[in-house]
Length: 168
Image 1 (cartoon, rainbow, N blue to C red):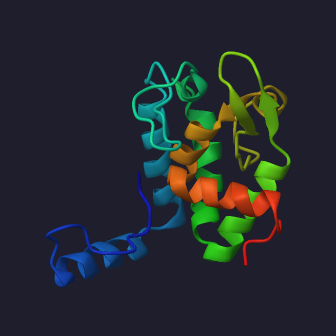
Image 2 (cartoon, rainbow, N blue to C red; image 1 turned 180 degrees about the vertical axis):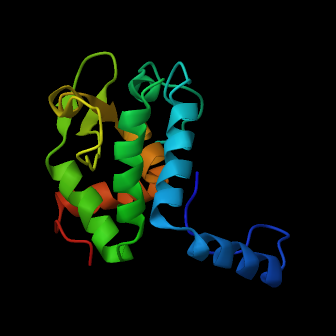
């Protein structure tokens, strides 16, 4: 996943980190979207969602991410949204997730838990049926994978959604 580097990786020198950050900053918006769309095509090949919530590990019983499989137009629309999302301030990002949780749906079927709409930014060039995509929902773990947030961060934001409803 291509996300703006926030800190040095373990064992990475400060100079290597700065070089990696400059490389990211020099990428054009369209290049970022293309790289992210390629990542979504890859995770679309997964048979099940990886469990990203709580302390549980392993795989869930849902197939939320398979919606990306061989669907470059959808991957591109979601990637476009994600790149724009990551350019927002941290508070704006947090508030977005809090608002999504407030409008999520509780699902008591196979994929127990909250269901979220797939985040998309459609353009006129996209060959995607927006109506069918808007009816497709994803689980909490899939949301964490797509938006590049940890399960712990999501849990904190859900707590804020249930209490204050504000990121600050």
